[in-house]
Length: 266
Image 1: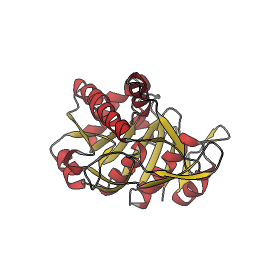
Image 2: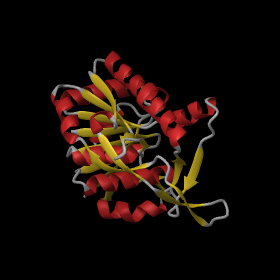
Image 3: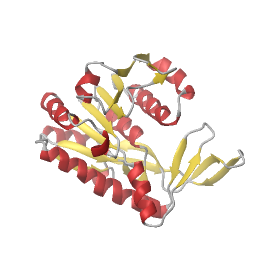
Image 4: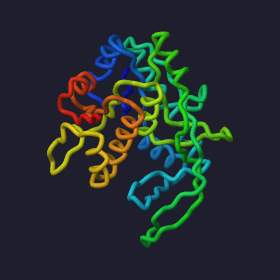
């Protein structure tokens, strides 16, 4: 079984062969897709007159600050527009996809972060209300696996449900890692717009779990989250994590064959 994390700007970003490639992989093993969509959320927020706000953590991770209104926009764009676009694309290409958010059937449960420590413009640490961002606590693996058993390909948007039943925004890469860990997948694949982890402009082809943890703080913003998610997945028992370029031909089969990608294994 493989969990595939794709970005939200799916149609613009994936190689034309990617959807038929997913179809080929679906014929061989269970596939679960988890998607993101931050750029689209930003675009729609601005159209609705809501300026997105980003915060930086003391360890240097930049993330979107989610107040209640943003959480609602997030849910609308992620679980509506993006999720159904992906499902439609897959259905059009003969893959029986089923779209759901983490809220449906409590697929992804998370704890609302009550407080956030951020670094303000002056470079000082500051404590602010946690907003509607979640830390994933559980995945309904039984439900997800039962969908696979019925021959469906689940497409999950990273909106989680809190203990108080609020919508929570969770990171897409980490959602993919948790789903992979909880359903005991063999592999998790993060598709991005580069061939994998690049250090000094050279592709890092192999990393052990320990090396990945050591290298993480030295990596740039976007990739840092993918390395973090990869290490979390391996810590939960997933055998390998792959970071590959969605813009290459047959990106999924190539990554599974360890071509032009970063492979992280225990």
